[in-house]
Length: 124
Image 1: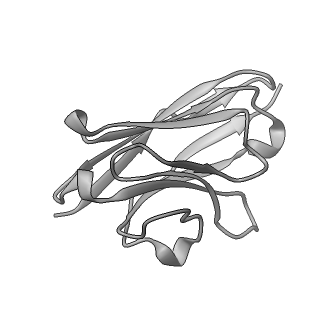
Image 2: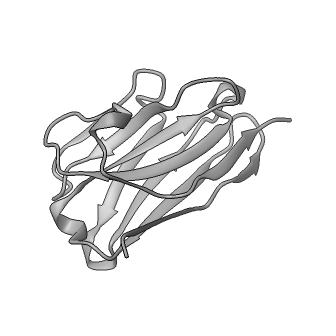
Image 3: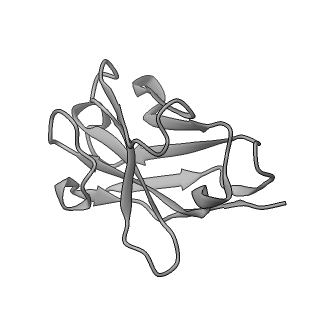
């Protein structure tokens, strides 16, 4: 079975940092680009960042550019999202997903497989 397991969420103060992990199994992980999305209560799911299958290309939403960094280790079937300088507006459930789409892919409909979410709360 295809699985994407997101982890690493938690409660952090404004200005703090977290690193999310997304572990994949049951499919050819290194043939897929991986994206991170977030969804706050009452809002639509939004693309945060994505990374190409080889890791050579990365894309970010404007709201996180310069603060978040996406990376991947295909030998471990894992993608990471390093989140620095966190703001209260970053509070959301974060999901990872896999797609065969090449190039920038920050729209939910472009993704084939989804993991369960991990909660990130930024609050003092």
